[in-house]
Image (cartoon, rainbow, N blue to C red; front, side, top):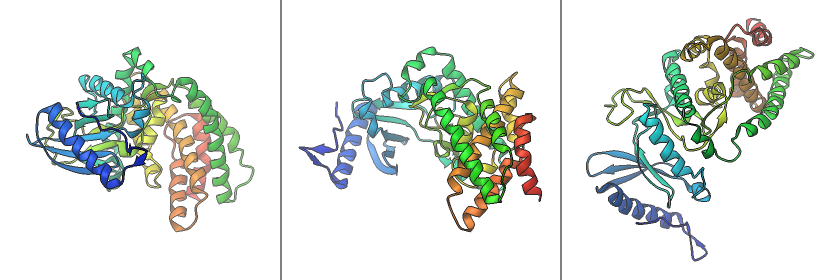
Length: 353
């Protein structure tokens, strides 16, 4: 068995060229050992992620969990957990890439290559993208539901992502949202609106639905939208979207995951979660439609105010446009929840003025 080893040799850090050569040697040898096929070419896709073209015509992805070396042999070992989670979810038909092989000693995992573009890029095109958004919502709910069927996953949670950690951090999230609200109101020249008290109610309503176990690395770049010419070869046949980076498990609210996956931190992202998308989310979870929509409504307000806290510190025309988009997003109710609707009314009046 061939190991990758560390980046330091005899107390000397390897140069980039030396490290690249070591990666190349490792991959060529390890692929032959694991898959009994020749490695034809290696293309870097991102930091510590490579596209491998194999002699049998397949394309697969190799990912090195550099910091996984710190978790090796722990219950939450990043590569072992990702391998186990992907294998489990894939066997249940969830929208995740098919795992092919892993090397926990060197912290490498090999999965199928999904030909497509990140969700952020797919959402830049014209249109409302309601169908695409529904596919993302369904994928997240499906993954969470599958993980909930097996209580053993709770032992694999990464440090800092327990239910208790979530509750402790949620108070701070409320403070950030309040800071964002105050900053946004100052931009509008508003004093004494009374919205702070309404925000406190909305922040509490975010906890109406219990958190779910799922991925903690939920950013738009980790959702891939299949290319239209993808022939679907592989084991996520028929899925329009595929969710990556599942190895770090933790507790969070479904609605907050959805917003992180679909919105990110870009000014254009806040426009994608609208009333039509909220209605489809309500339909995905049987029997929970009013509660789901109200929870999404509340989390959307808090998330937008987190962005406001970040963006109000900026300057110039691009930031003004971003804040205008944010105000429009805050003006649109996603449910019939009285507290959220009352809070959003101020921003609706601002947009209409």
